[in-house]
Image (cartoon, rainbow, N blue to C red):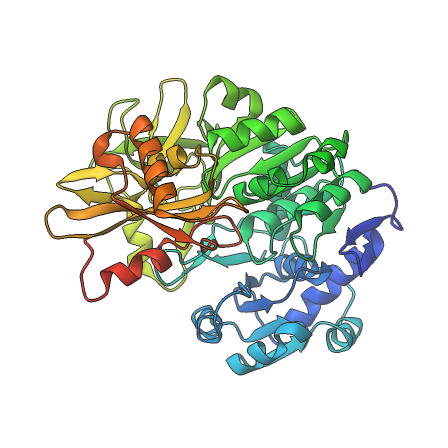
Length: 501
């Protein structure tokens, strides 16, 4: 897609960079970090910034400088932001005017604000390209913290910058990000998937278009007008797109759009089918994590033939399920899923947390095998199906109940826009099943509707899986990645009581 040095490589609607400018600024940012700000290879910096071109430039510059760069979720509280800065040992924090006060309150040492201040610093830095045989940096993304304090994840780094660039370009091509059209960032740049998928696509020649914020109508316009080739969405975005007026959806046509990656959260069968019916067979689902990258892929045809699969295991990985004792289970049996990269024995570590790193490993009898906490099964044909997160499992009367299965069933009810299922204390059973429901706009909450939804659930689920009660919420607390902050819904019920999981 890269046509000439003067062609646009990066655009957020306010700021544009040509390929030549991007190359120059990448070198200058790398030298700014190393020479002017005094960071050494392996040191840490952070970014607390709205979606804008500098998010991409800083990540690429840090890669060239050999620096770990942590994008920070701007939805966090001041205390949580300060925790990430402190825990990451970041000595430099890049920000913009919107988050400058929060950034300075963290007192990391050096704060640089996007705009005149950062531009002066970049312009004054050395413009010589970094040595390709020197060390590579990379992202240190913090896990979303949906069940506890987030931790920084440091993925394995290739030995040189040259090799790191090759690996990222090849990794992008392996999942369809081969640079064949502009790439649209729809989600926040502090999240690993939207930012890094775009970076990988750009390594293969794709210009990047950055949406400052998600808006369903605006997304349709950008996809169509900018002739976007690839993008990444999360299931909640699918839902918002499908809620647009029929006439607006009917007008949408984007023949250049060839790939829509989605993952990070479960998608209901009905929602995905409607998206395929509307956009065609361009949806590609993945399963993976910040720790591992993409482990499985399912294109639309795979999913239509194997409904609800999250994909077939990629050739570079092995995946298997285990029982409570860490022993492999037979094919097709649900258990805690473990993965192993065939070429990289230690794929990741948690920053300054050896115990958490060790806790993710299966043990010496399965060297290199790690878990990201998902429960599911691997079928004989290599397709993986998820049941739930280990941390979300409800144990009621000694029986394991997986909330994701119940959520999928309830999402089929026409009045349900979003749903979360979790366990609450029960003196007789230990835990009982609770559902929190966000209703379709225009639908009124009532006891009668709650009864109707529960009756619907009984038609589709075994009796012990049916929620005992429903809470109606104006909006469920979702991370921008689409993941639910289950603990925010669950914690009020467990005040003063110990949960076993």
